[in-house]
Length: 495
Image 1 (cartoon, one colour):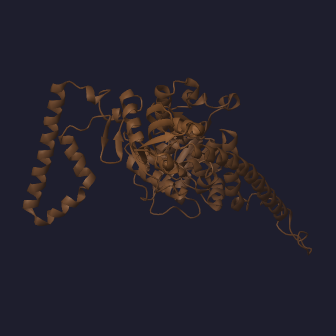
Image 2 (image 1 turned 180 degrees about the vertical axis):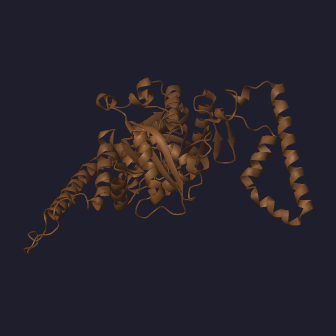
């Protein structure tokens, strides 16, 4: 657990690890249930918990009252006692009644996946704490019933409050207190949001393109940012937290990447997404993720070495749609490509080794085609087997036959394979970014009068100066600028 500790406060670091038992129900709805349980384990570690065991059950539907089947309750209770578990961690969002019933049956505190994620977010910065407290209170409101069942429910007199027992009075007071606190938190968050909006408008006036790193948590977004900062900024203090753990980054960070020739861009590192991300949390972090909606280009970072990367990509797409950012141009960055091979860099293999591998790949492809043809000849209905191969799979087979399993490289119109720790990968990624975010730029020739020096200063800061000379009439420029700026200064255009 030491690798997680240095991102938390001293008080958090000194906390004793809580022993937890993981419980999940596989209903068949998830494509990879085992990955989901492993993810739950990593979430527990990120919240200073020590997973001591796992209990799973295969069911068509979760139990409405207990989540797990009635026969499984005793097994979970026995496992918790044998492993000295202090907490039961459920891999889904539970209803208030399910939490209450499970705790009564198991005699051990129970929390669900949503509460766990909220607790992780609450550990970090002030804004994150405000946002998470709002989400937690909204999550708690419908779960107040039953929390004070030891108190009486009704009295015998009449009146608005006098007829209520201590339990109902306590429930009403708690509800009012929570609603009041939510109102206060929203005011604080609105103030932060207005400040961020002012900063965003200021950046928008500069015409510098904004590129946002998005994707599943722990896919390598912060690593990409840090290596860009190292290569093009050269300031170690500008780097962000980088850890091999879930939700290492919870704050939105923006850095200006100076690539030279006035083709800079702003790069923002955002919180990672995750499967079953609580809806309330997405809503709570909406202001923080506003940077995504204002981006000129999204870099969807994917851990291509993860067996479940396709499901992770779908989770990212769903979350972006929920945020209203589904239509922004996107470059898919398949990161950690080096983990797909046994060598550190497949582009530097000996030539004879690459030729030998290519022959093997060609043979595999030929053998597969012969096998498919044989099945088809045996039974014409087996032509339907061809439908099992998607166009992407066919293309991948063709690329393998051509030895295109190297990196860094581009693929198609919107994909790139890289290893974020490799300088050549960062160089190629930056080139692809510039090619896209500066696609709306055009080359123009301008003659700016000397009394309009502010225009020259603006273009020097926000356009690529290709030529500059001084003439009696003013400053002559050949620039590559945004088409909006070309139209704005059209009166100074010369041939």
